[in-house]
Image (cartoon, rainbow, N blue to C red; front, side, top):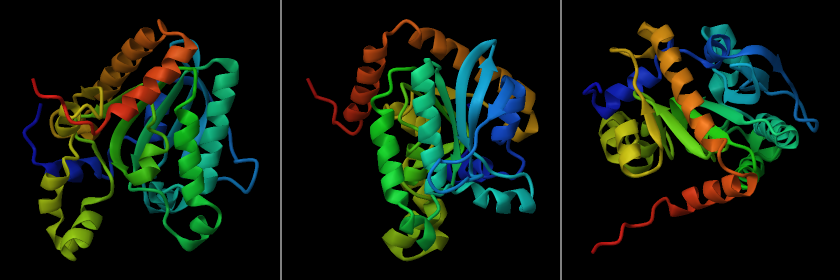
Length: 269
């Protein structure tokens, strides 16, 4: 595993050429059929989801979507979903539950969109409902953090039986800049905040927040994406095979207890 600092990993996680959701869809799945709209208010391009085949098996794939250039980033709101996106994701999850399809989520977002219009349309409620509903799903759920995983905007797709994370991805309650602004009133101290926040994959694995680190090519996933896709494919296949051995009620109970245990202090002998 590379010996990058936390701040360096944040920089790699944000690299503009890092593989995005469309790249994973093209590399890992076939026959992807996207579905749009939340059946309430509208469509949100920041979350892409639909039905696909993974090694011939029907699965539901949902993820936050960033663009490859300015035009695509604007269309996807730079990967910051609105409530319509989270409601669309929940609609697809309930559909997967009905038809007994595993759910695979891909997370790469600076956070949910914090704008006034998003709050007016129920941003907080949409995220909270996803957390609640995901905890009760009786199909396998695997989440993969591929870049940034910040705040409730990431957690709304992250209540999973298995939470996997790329080596140079980050996962935290908010961005390092936001953390530094709140704690020290100085966003320029974001590199210092990166170390304090324990947001890297090794930190989170040691705390039991994630279940596995998927190694990246030296220098980052964007330098050899085909190698990364092979690693991700193997990890998803392995974890799906393990979860297939559990019954529906056990999947829901295990997922619920997994998140209830987070943050508890280990008992000392």
